[in-house]
Image (cartoon, rainbow, N blue to C red; front, side, top):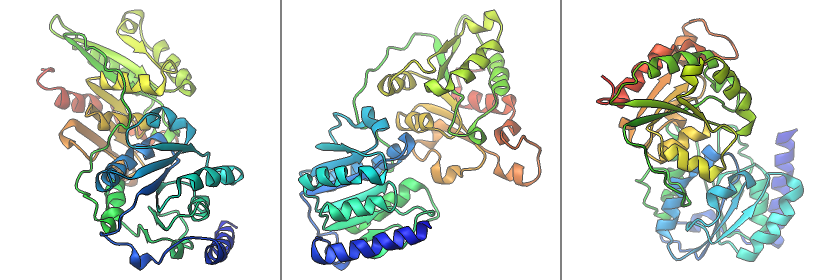
Length: 368
């Protein structure tokens, strides 16, 4: 059904462009092309937005005087409002019923070039065409239909590498400098003062699905190994981060600890705005996490991480910058080889001792 829907939208847009649209032939797009008005579409999750920032940075560097309009998701508003990257921001929930409002607003920006870095196919292309774009470039994911490619001036093909590199490769046709793969935090935020002799290790226990979560009992085991390091010279503290939907996880974790152990734990789960979360992650010495948005925030902030992967491939979506700061534990090969793990919690195969060993490597020389 979706394929049929995409095909019908392709026919509609082809007819629309013939009589009312402004799309130009793709062969006229090249490294000499200049644009004064550029639209960027990034309407999905927080981690996706961060993956898009190297490409956004490259576009800004290539066209420093251009007016940039961002089509974003409301949930990322705190990450983009007031950003020097964008002159105008339009919010969209990826639903067709709200597409006309986005088209109407985007037409006011009169985009010459629209770069779709991650959004909802096929409605994102529909919006770009009907807003009057001259050229549309799109980072196509493996699950996206290819039926709309004839309307695109450039698009991503098969790519065996990191998602950030794929997006940057898309921009080569524009003559962008695509060598900088570092993610960027688009907005300013408050920097917290670190407490001397205190080593602050963050735990992100929740994730979008349980297959990306390390079980609570593993975090409890790890906590006891970490707190055993406390001495007069170094005091270890653990900070829990997460959204309000993850308070049950935090409560279960705290209930698994003794009264004495709980005094070294600070739970911020469900208690921070997105900007406050940036401040607290920046203040960490290290973050232990699954494949989540906070992992990518920490990487962008050059905070050390130990990240746990079971299904998603970290070579495609894991840390890419400052690799000396990051330890990745990827267990797909173990699972494929038949090692036992609960179906819903494959990361349980990773022991607390294994994670603790990686923490010690990253924290050296602080940890003996």
